[in-house]
Image (cartoon, rainbow over all chains, first blue to last red; front, side, top):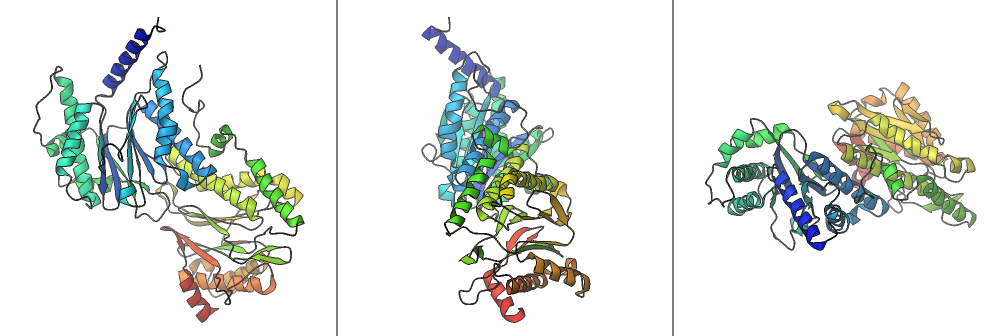
Length: 262
Length: 274
C-alpha cells in the first residue's frame, strides 16, 4: 500500500515527525568565532558530542549516540581517503557534505522500511583566515545549509527544535559584540547561549502547542542548575596551532577556569 | 537490502589500510609501481634516486634527527636538495634511506594511518603500535627488497607522551625485511651510517659525557660534524655545501613537538664550530 503516492508522502511525514520528536530535547550545540579561530560548545551528560574529522574540520551533533557515531565515521572515512588519495588541501567541507554525506542521508531517510538516522549535525571548517571559515548544518533528511549562502554569520547554533534554535541565534545576535574576543569570553558567551537554548527546549516540552511569548531568563542561573548533572564539553579549531591538525579538545580545567565567575 | 550509507558493517578498529582496501587501494602493488619506476629509470641511466645518511640521537630534551640532502643514482649526484626527514605526526619523524619513491609512499600511508586511528578511535596510537605499523609496511615491500629494487631502511624517532605519561624520546631502526630494533642511544642508516655509528659510539663512550646529557646546541653541532664526517668518505653523502648554500636537515622532537633548526642557525654553527 506504500506504493500509492499519497501513502508514501504520509509515511515520510510520519517519519519526520517521529525523528523531530526524538531530537527535540537533545542538548544544543553552539558555534562561536574568537580571535584565533572557532569554538564549539555543548553541555552533555556522558557521551562526547564534539569530534575532529580532519586537519581543519570539526563535527558536532545531537541525536542518537549510535547514529552520531555512524555519521562521524562516514565523515572521517571520506575525509581521510580523499586526503590520502589527493592531498590534505583537497578535503573540503563543501564536498564532504554536498557530495558525500547529504545524498547518502537522503537515501537513508526515504527508505521508509528501514530505521531512520536520528541525528542533526553542525560541521565547521577553519579557513586560512576568518573570512574563509565555513559552517554547515546538516539534517537527518540530507538537507543542509551553508553559512556562506544562508546566515552569513561567523556563529551558529544547533538545537533539536526550531524554537530553541531561534532563541539561541537571537541571543547570539544580541550579545555578539567583539568578534576578536578571547577564548575565555567566547566560552562564557557560548555557555550562556547553550543555557538559553536548553531552557527553551525544555519549556517547549511543558507547554501545549501554543507559542510562548519571549521569556526572560537568567542564563547564568539556568546553566548552574544544569551543570549539577552535566558537564561542559568544548573544542576549538585554532589557527595559531603550529601543527597541521588545528583541532583541540579543551580540558576541564581550562573550561572551569573560564566559567568560574559566571 | 544494500545499506544506503558506506558504513563499515564490521567492528570499527581504526585500521586505515582496510578502509583504503574497501576503496580499491592495495599497498603492495603501489609500492611495486614505485619500485618499477625506479628500476626503469635506473636502466635508462636516468633520474632514479637513492637516499644516503640519516641519523637519530637521543639527547637531554628528546631526540635529534638529521639527514643530508644528496640523492644519488649510481655514481651520479642527482639532486642536492632532497628531503629525507618526513614528519609523520606531531611528535614523530621518519628518516629514510633507500629508494625515495617507495619511502614517500610508505610515509604517506603511515601519516594517514596514525591520523585516522586517532580520530576514529579517539585516542592516540601507542608507540609500539606505530612502530609495528611501519614494520608491516616494510614486510609488504619484501618481494621488492629481495629483487633489490625498492629497498627502504628507515629510522623512526618519536617522543612518547601517550596516556599522559612522559617516557621521553625513542629511536627505532629497521632492517630492509621489516625487523624492528629499538636504539638505546642512537641509530643511523644509509651508506654513510657506518662512519656515523662509529663516531657516535666513540663520543658516547669516551667523549667526556654521554650523548643523553647533551643540550640542544651541543647535539646540533655534533650532528653537523657527524654528517661532515660521513660526507668525507662517502660520496653519496653531502655535508654543508657552501657554494650553493645547502644545509642538511636537522630537527628535534621534544615534549613540545617537532622543531626544525633554521638554516640561519645552522650557518652560524657551521662557521663557528665545524
